[in-house]
Image (cartoon, rainbow, N blue to C red; front, side, top):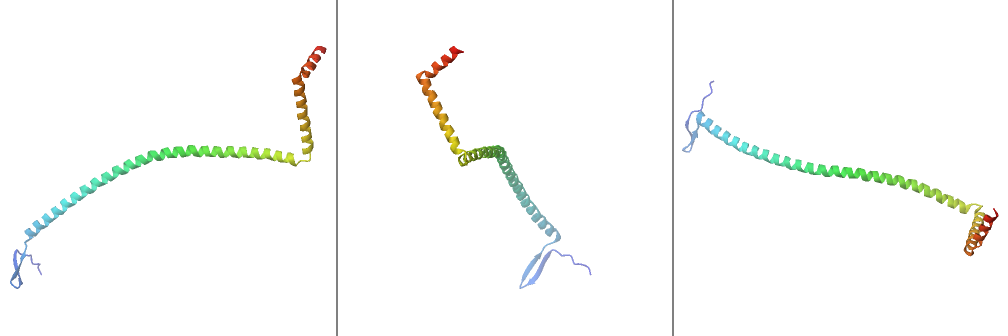
Length: 152
């Protein structure tokens, strides 16, 4: 069978009403108008979307550059501070070992059997120094030194 091409005109749909049947040319014109309107609307939306995308990209670029500078500065400072902390930790470790060794020596001194002997020697030395100072203050030490020089 051969397809029947629609014809322009009216069709009776009952109750005294008629439906207008469009011709191929009328359909093409209507379809073309509708496609042009949709195309224009899509072009407007595409241009708006592209403009908003460019603006978003510009904002992102600005923020990235702004944050990048701060990040690089922060990174440099953290490296310097980290190095200072490491050096401080090493120094504290070394000085703590020295201090503990010296404290150990003092502890050993007080706990040793020779402690009383060493304290007695220290007292004798201090008494000797005090006697020498007294002899120097009253001039006796100077007179003895002069006599030794004359005899020599």
